[in-house]
Image (cartoon, rainbow, N blue to C red; front, top):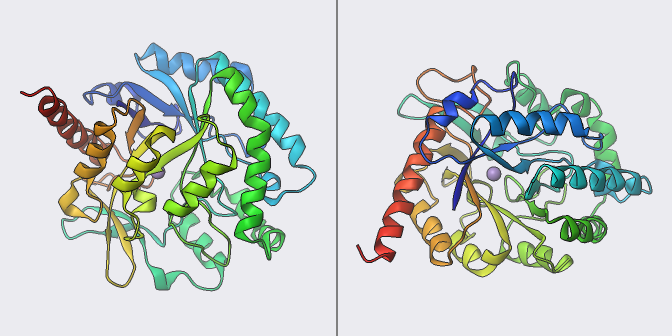
Length: 358
Ligand SMILES: [Mn+2]
């Protein structure tokens, strides 16, 4: 397993690469050109500049999270071919600088969804929170809540320009079924996966967060059965998964270690996060420690370790600690993710030792 860290880029993240270098065991930076809207061309010079900088600090830049997918592709509009061409162009450019994995998602309209970005935990820290009953009929309520709460940062999937067209977007998706969304995903993959195979770049879809439909929109990457359907769309190792325990975790019926054991050879990128799920279905993000939430992080890492997983792994979101809330990107502070790295490396080290018979 290769430990990595998501970083939003120079001037776009409260954390520096020099700080990340001091976290033991982090080998690679998960990056993106965050200023790019879905469907926009990525210029070679911009890609090169970013990866040069990351590599100059001693990290690899093997993973991009994300190259976002234009809504016309998800909607299956005739204009999708134009955007798929641009996507293929980006894949080829990323291959040139040695990118191995592209993380992406296929969620209609909304990326991840929360109702409170700074919900207090009993220890005085705070974290991203999802309150089931606060999701009203009107998605605009939630947009206002998130945008009003995110400070100076623009969050991926929540770009104000995109959110301004919310009515239009919802109209476009009206009546779309799961089967149609799967069809549109299949069409996209059938065009891009041959290119990925030729250029040795693996696609890794991220599960939907939370793992259930919201506002009547279909969400198709959310449990074992949906993942199985997805992997059958294009049966190539280049069409794989980003397995995010934090996204699948709020549905307590998801047995994540079993999912890892079943689909391990198609998992290219492991996101590790713990969530605490309340009886009423609300959930909050907590520390990586297994006992603090409902994700058994030890069992998750053991499932990877048992199959000799040598893919990329990163701490997903963390809590905001020691006064860093509102100075960092929501969920992407320094301290709790660094603690998460050490917790995971501790488990991995002890699994290694046991395997070696020490
Ligand atoms: Mn994730």
